[in-house]
Image (cartoon, rainbow, N blue to C red):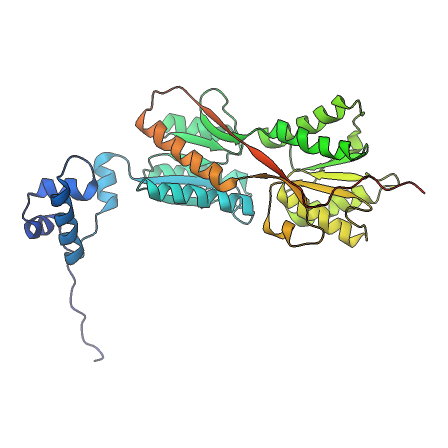
Length: 344
C-alpha cells in the first residue's frame, strides 16, 4: 500500500545470541570470533543460534577494539593485465583459507596514487598489506605506521621487507639463450622499464646470455616500450622497420609480447619464418593464435598465495628474520622460435 511505513528492523545483538544458545556473552563472543577457547559443541550451538537470529559480527567494532582487523590490504598495479588479476586471485583464495577478507586497490598504472591508497588501507585498520610496489615510499610509510608489508613480483627494500619473487635474471638468461641456440645474433629486447627489479633483472639476464656467447650487445636493439599494448606495438613497429631489423624479439612481459605480435602482423612479418618472438609471462591469447607464442611462464596465482602465507607468518611472528621467497618459472614452447631467415 502506498504511503505505508515499513516496520523498523532491529539488528540482533550478541546478548540475544548468548541467551538463545544458553551461554554467557563472553563465551558467545569467543565462539563467534575464534579468539579464545570454546568447546566444539558450544561453538556449533552458538553459531547455529547466530544463524537463526540473523546475527552478523560487527567487523568494524571488533577492529576498533583490537586496533586491527581480519582484512588484508592488496595493492596491484593494473588488473587489466592478466598477470595482476591472477596474482590478486591467488591472494584472495589463500586469504579465505585463513579467514581473511581483502581490501583490493587497483592503481590502474597510476603510481602516483600508491601512497594515497596505502593511507586509505591503514585507515581501514588492515592487518597487513601485500603489494606490487612502485617505489620505496610504500615500505617507508607502512613501517612508520606499524603495518607489515609483503612485496610481491618486484621489490625495493631488499633487507627489511619480506618478498615473494621469481629469479628474473636467470629466467631471462635462459630465454635469451634459447634464441641464441636457434642461431639468432640480432636479438632485440622490448622492455617496459629498468628502474624496478623486474625490468632491471630481465635486462641483465638478456645481457648475460649475449656475453656468454660472446655476442656484442647493441643499444639500438634494447627498446623501452611503455605500459600498454598499443604503445608497445608502435615501438615494435619502429624496431622491426629498421633496415637491418632484428631476427628475433624477446618481449619482457605479456603486454609487450602482445604489442610485438601485433606489430609483426601489421608489418606482414611471419612468425617464426621472418622473425622469432618470445615473451615473458603467459596469457590465454598466446595459445589461441597460430603459431602460439613461446613464453617464460610464472605462476601468478601461486605467487599471490605464497605472499598471503608470508604475510600471515609475519603477523604471527613479527620479529622473525626477513625472508625472500623465490618461485620457479618454466619455459612454454609453442613454436614461435625458428632459425633466422637466410639472407637473400
